[in-house]
Amino acid sequence: MVKARVQDLASMGRPVRLSTLIGKAWARVLVTLAPRCPYRMGDAVVGEDPFNGRHEGIVTSRRGSSVELGTAAGVFFYDHRHLRRQD
Image 1 (tube, rainbow, N blue to C red):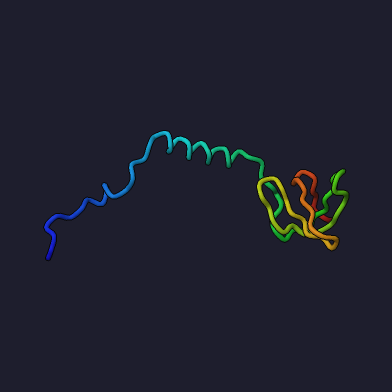
Image 2 (cartoon, rainbow, N blue to C red):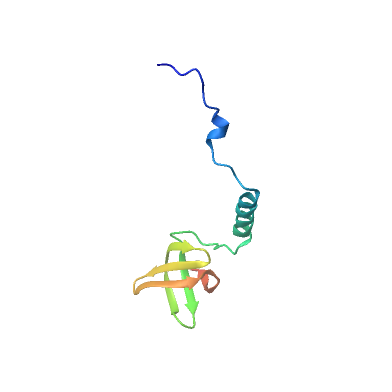
């Protein structure tokens, strides 16, 4: 049997609150203004920190301002401000 009535596609989505849209827009603004790490995965860097010491290695992952540095001695986590490129 064929239906004579077709559902309007615009009414199929959930209603969106204005506060939800504003919240998502504000979160995007905060992400763009947050400090970002200038190093990419695979970059050779030197990390100097009073707690972790000095280690040379390769950036293996980034999350926010934290960088995971893979070295021969193991894996160390540094803030990106404590890193510099190898000479």
